[in-house]
Amino acid sequence: MNIEDLLKKSQDAVAFTKEELMWMLSCPADSPETFRIMAESNRISKELTGNKAEIHAQFALNLAPCACNCMFCSFAKVNGVFTEETRITEETAIGYACQLEADGANAVYVMITAQYPFSMFLEISQEIRKHLKPDTLMVANIGDQSLESARKLKDCGYAGVYHALRLREGKDTGLKPGARIESLRNFREAGLAVGTCVEPVGPEHSNEELADMILFTASLNPAYSGAGRRISIPGTPMAEKGMISELRMAQIAAVTRLGMPRTVQGNCTHEPCTLGGLAGATLFWAESGANPRDVEEKTEEGRGETVQTCKTIYKECGWETWEGPSRYYGEK
Ligand code: SF4
Picture 1 (tube, rainbow, N blue to C red):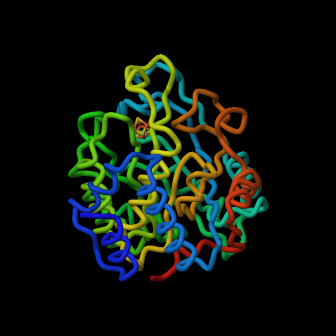
Picture 2 (cartoon, helix red, strand yellow):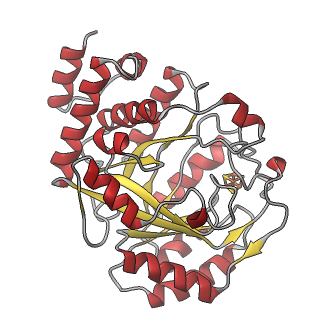
Picture 3 (cartoon, protein in one colour):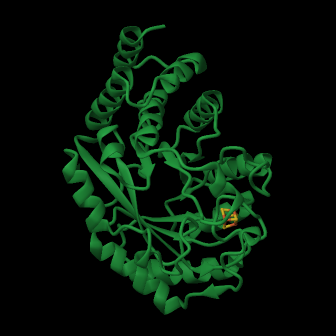
């Protein structure tokens, strides 16, 4: 296997095998081979998007200790970061959503922790929907759902969901991989587009695990895939495992782009950075309110980036930004 043959294969849009993805992931992050893979990913992303990257913005309806105990999440009860639940009011939720829309986000995401009442989520979502412009896309970031609930999300005005089978799901999380996969099926059957990602990547994940996950996300023909690194929550057991560098994350995002079919326009990375944009990321997230990667109650006062900052980061690495509703959540 060599880089010339793999790049030729990518230029011919031929699907990669697991072994080929592993080979690309095994190149040192600062090697010429990786830089060429990142350049190829950037080329594909620019071709598919007309050099217009997107910014999606998320806020949460609640902040709560969550019994699902995903070890990397600041809401996980075991991590002890947050000990009491706080919920924002409908009015505050509408305020967040309208602000993110006004800031120019290409899609507005509404997040809840797994135990937040679904009926309340629908109620507030309907009110948010009424206050947003008709063509503003809403995306739900919520727990596993039945087909019936997925249909309710669709009826409520959601264009899609963010949902992922996380790395080491069921080992590092209290959730069952089978339930995550079933939810992904339910969302798609209900007509909701699914955005997903290879996440949350830590230094302990092998190239084989990453390649398997890239291929799994490709099998969904999602709105977008990509790669996001795990952000250490200070004082937690996961933090002891460390974090991968932005460069390694950029490499994984690039290999993920190469591993996706061309029908998948979006390639996300998180958190936003110029290396990610350079490596062909076409989706950054802005965040407000509670955030599972932050210990601040309002992530805009912590790690969260604004839509404007994301735009600036894109500009610094040669990207223009798309104005209007996300193309990733549109019809394929
Ligand atoms: S990632 Fe979601 S389900 Fe897991 S602990 Fe955090 S809020 Fe709960």
